Image (cartoon, rainbow, N blue to C red; front, side, top):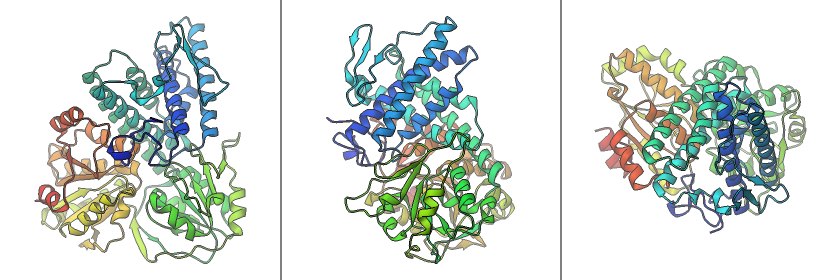
Length: 556
């Protein structure tokens, strides 16, 4: 076995990637990520001790969320960049140990903190503690032999990865919450205990879900305070006559800086995949060169980028390793936690700004995009906009015009089985409305599903983190309809997952007591039969079957 990873939905054979990742991750990259996560767990143990003394190290907290974020699926494939993270992690771990010793705080003897690592060769690390050289397997996911304990620990870690991504995007806009850092660090510390049992781990996992709610609420506040509340927006999916830069990922701060620096330069800026919802923020509409959306979900980029002809900026995960004869990689720029060999990385300057002049200058020399579709799609149905429509929606519910809302949030992916979600949307009765967020919407947001007396049958709340909007909408409807419990609402959940941000959305919903969630297209490989049984008993989680069976079960 060269590696082991089962953090995403496309993991090999539905069990785990052992030769190389289906995502394209190589064993040496996976090894570095395992090592980084191991060191980060040690950092979390140490910073929790400092936090208990009221003196948590803010730099360590920031680094921990970045380290978790950069190991998320389809974020970083660059070994040199990961070596930089490893070097920084060791430096910060030593700083934390020094501060604790200075304050006479005892450092526990735990494998994650009681070691020394040679900095000479990150390809083959020697880990040494008081008992001698440790087995390299200590880094691996498979170090925990009990599959239930292992699965629950990884569920907690993957939830923390998703939470960390949202916390980083909020931090980029100047918003942070110490409670989120504390939950992440406490989680990583607790799962490192050798005596932690399954019951404790279930509680830890639900606490991660509570942290997810906090992180999504924080990011919602950061985005709306900075850029305004999203509003209903028709987005052009055709192309203009000028060269373009296609922006992918989730980070709105990066988009803001690029738009500002490219204004008046003869270049159009397009959104891609999860960046589409940026089109609905009032702040960005002042830029006339903010042209429209190009393409579909993240996994189609290998084909669609070939026809865009311009430059590309990845602001977060969702980058895909190229095919051997790909022509566009030298035109790809990454930033933040994203890394890919053969691309160009833009780092933050000492002034906290990013210089996008190079990508803009190169874009000016490119050909305009080749049109692959034309028309418009609609977005902007975040909580503020939908609540403004609440009187009309409630009237439609009471008159029987809207029978059910179907939450079809989450991620898209490459598996042919995901056509299920397109067929489900097509067959959904005409008195049902889809609530969506995340790139799963690309399976149906261009279908002619119509509206119900002016209310579109697909209400797109935004990015995956905007699943928080769907919760706010549900709570508002509960109050307006005078119901005691959110599970009494005419809302059903049929959610697609792919990576760790979908995991934190699921855990957030569970922490809020949401029942009867269906998920697919396959169950996570880290859900053992025992874990699934408990989730079914506590929350009635279900799995998708066929479209017709699920329509009968969910809609009636």
